[in-house]
Amino acid sequence: MLEQISSILSAIDDFVWGIPLIVLILVVGIFLTIRLRGVQFTQLGYAIKLIFKNDSSGKSGEISSFAALCTALSATIGTGNIVGVATAIVAGGPGALFWMWVAALLGTATKFTECMLAMKFRQVKEDGHIVGGPFFYIENGMGKRWKWLGKIFAFFGVGVGLLGIGTFTQINGISSAVNNFFDPQNSWTVDLFGRTYSYTVVIAGLLVTLFVGLVIIGGLKRISRIAEIVVPFMAVLYIVSALLVILCNITKVPAAIVEIVESAFGLRAAAGGALGAVVLAMQKGIARGIFSNEAGLGSAPIAAAAAQVDEPVQQGLVSMMGTVIDTLVICTLTGLTIVLTGAWDMGLEGVAVTTKAFQIGLPFPEVVASFILMISLVFFAFTTILGWDYYSEKCLEYLTGGNMKAVKAYRWIYILAVFIGPYMTVAAVWTIADIFNGLMALPNLIALIVLSGVAAIETKDYLTYKKKGK
Image (tube, rainbow, N blue to C red):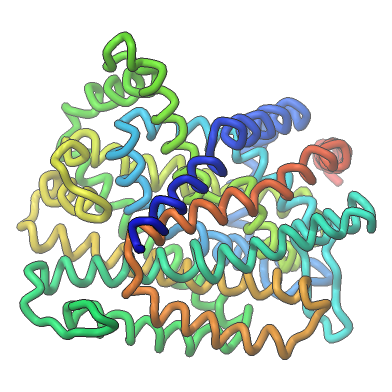
């Protein structure tokens, strides 16, 4: 029975993340890059400056611009950066990392556009709290007759949060990492739900559930406060550790880059299998890249809409840095450590691949390298759980017409999903997450194409005024 369910899920996943969606994501990124005149390249320096400026001068909004970015990063920097990259490279070869880069470079324009539109079309409720995201720029930007498309996005948004990125994949990653470090041989076990689990899985699951409950019951401001503290800390810890792996193996970097590029274009495959190798690398790389940085998915705009900034373009520039930090920095570092150490080709899966890369690459005892990776993954996944609770709450709020009782009840259901997450099978979890990812992206991508003219005008006007010093 389980095998049949897994087979059905895999078939749905292959259909959703087939060539059409991959092409659509890339085409939208190319289209927006051209229409916005390469804003992600020409305004990169200004965007970095805005991050450190941490503007909160807007007349409306709930959190600072920097807090909005950290909240978005808390959701995007997760197991996808550690487990997802490893999964993509094992399945699609080192070339999958190259296609992650392509998706990220184009996706930065996509992230800018969706976050800018979210700011422009956001709504301030009577009690002062902000609601914004693709559902509102679909309804208010495209017109009321398109509200059904906004509803579809919101429905899949709740699904992604509750059944995909937000809960199962993250808590599964945490419990697996803790188990692999403290009890890799499963010496201390307990029978639950008809299966045998290590006590470390059970304890980790209970602790994470407790901490998640304590934070999300406090709402956006508590989530953003935690994110502002934890996100910079966890990013620096992981980046420094991964850079150390690369520096200790610096002579292998050129060969690793060559291997990544050759693999991306099927140059290492047999003549008959070259096209298949390219397609597989593209599919795994782009799917995992989108899973990680969420560009085009429509999630980050929900956090961006709450920023205390009055200029939509300004917040779009800040928010697009999320894709740069997530994929072009963190995923790249993970991928390079995996490729240059050869950990991807050792018959390992998931977090074990990245753990092996750190163990081989770091000049420390294996236990120290494993501990660093475990702590990084725990922090990454924990903050993703928090961020996606906020996203899915806002989607549910839109679906129910602002019924806050339903939202508060949903929080407890979300906590329950985190609680049962460690006991879900890994393969099924990632497959479900991929499916909801793709289905959520479709309504958003349609809206971005339709509203690209609005985005282009807003961007041109803002940059013109900026150039004049206004």
